[in-house]
Amino acid sequence: MPRRPRSGSRSRSDSGAAFRSQPHNRAKGSEAERRGVAWLRRQGYRVLAVNVTNRGGEIDVVAVDGDTLCFIEIKARASDRFGPAVLAVDATKRRKLARAASAYLAGRPWEGPCRFDVLGMDLVDGAFEYTLLRDAFLAE
Image (cartoon, rainbow, N blue to C red):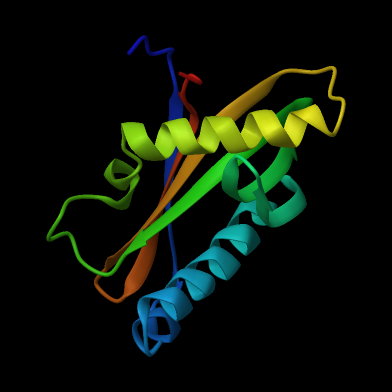
């Protein structure tokens, strides 16, 4: 798969206790997405939509960064047992996200650039460590 240069950034956050205390994975995912959206806003993203579902699939966050429309996948992990959270966005997930983004754009004209970002949230010593990969992949 051809890759374009990407930029990444890392930072730490408050306690991940609320994430760990959730009763099941769906609730943990909702908590992680809520925290991820708040973190993205603090980084300057203008969030347009959260949990967009269409015939192509689901997009966790649609946001604008500068003049670029961003389709953002958020992944969170409570441990490093299976590696960092950003690695959970595999080829299958990238294809699904690209299809969902295409369907999203079909109904909303956008004249500027678009990109796919991945926000990984890893619990490290009781706090989330955020890893943002801007322009993480190209649509396949």
